[in-house]
Image 1 (cartoon, rainbow, N blue to C red):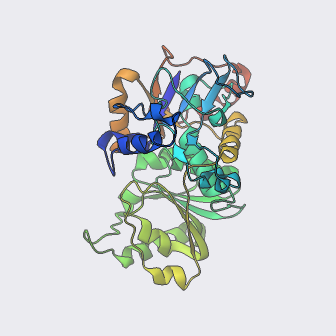
Image 2: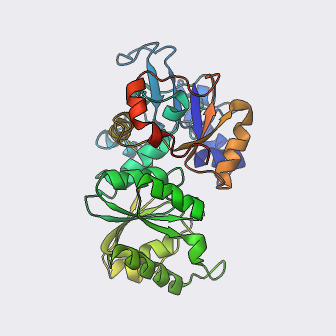
Image 3: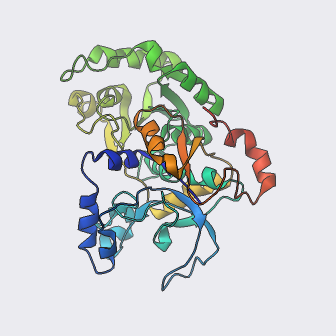
Amino acid sequence: MASSVNYNTVWTSIFEPVSTFGFLERYGRLSDLTKRHDLPYHVVGSDLAGVVLAVGPGVNRWKAGDEVVAHCLSVELEDPAGHDDTMMDPQQRIWGFETNFGGLAELALVKSNQLLPKPAHLTWEEAAAPGLVNATAYRQLVSHNGANMKQGDTVLIWGASGGLGSYATQMALNGGAIPVCVVSSPEKAEIVKRMGAELVIDRSAEGYRFWKDEHEQDPKEWQRLGKKIRELTGGDDIDIVFEHPGRETFGASVYVAKKGGTIVTCASTSGYLHQFDNRYLWMNLKRIIGSHFANYKEAYEANRLIDKGLIHPTLSKVYGMEDVGQAARDVQTNTHQGKVGVLTLAPTEGLGVRDTAKREQHLDAINRFRGL
């Protein structure tokens, strides 16, 4: 019924860092069943909210007619490595990016252990928005596989009003942590304040230039950021850095984390080749944790927070399928707020709500990002 755009759709669209047809070819070599993914077209999209049309042999938990959302972890689970944390499965892939038949379509093909109950108080497009980024933020920030955030932790969140950061901000607030939200405009600062964040850094107003040129960073700018953080927090340094811009910010992230602090990283939307001064890491006993999407349990818990009304969608704009290219362009150029949704089979916005009483209770929070 609906899907949304994530940065992996941008990477697919521009064939960077690699063409995703290579992923499909390799997956197709795995078995006779996976050959169907190796096609001269790629149905992309790593989020969906919709209705189960049919189930395959051995599927018992779901049936035709069930209203569901899907998370994007595709695993085979034939190797023992995947049975402690399914993200460690050697055949772990991101559906709709490293597999075919993703969510930006009228029909999608998923594994049964990708499905989760659709929150009944949300529309199709609202329910489709959180999936990938909400579960990613949960593992990265909350899970013991990530930063294992606790009450009172001071958390630096880059891009705090964006698709990923907007969920990290909510989780920090909901979990009793203290988010320090980094944004790039006064308008984005107002967005995170509306979510309840009090400590906000507007990068554009501060004029940070972490790189002197293409090859050399400026440690004085790291120090200036650290001073600003301490001004906001009353002298506290950062326990956890929620990292996803990558190359542009990583040196600063390592520097500003407190002694013994944690930098948890994914995505690298500004570049994959991170550079940092290792003296600030090794001599201050800091940790860098790599985090990638989420396992089924983590995705379930993240979706449960949505269903309970503790975390809310950050959907700002919705396109039709005919304009999905523009939706991806919005995300690529960072001209969007929160998440950008796409209607697939749903004919109009506003459909799919089953629990109107719960919706009314949370309506203001659900609509915080709309029209921005």
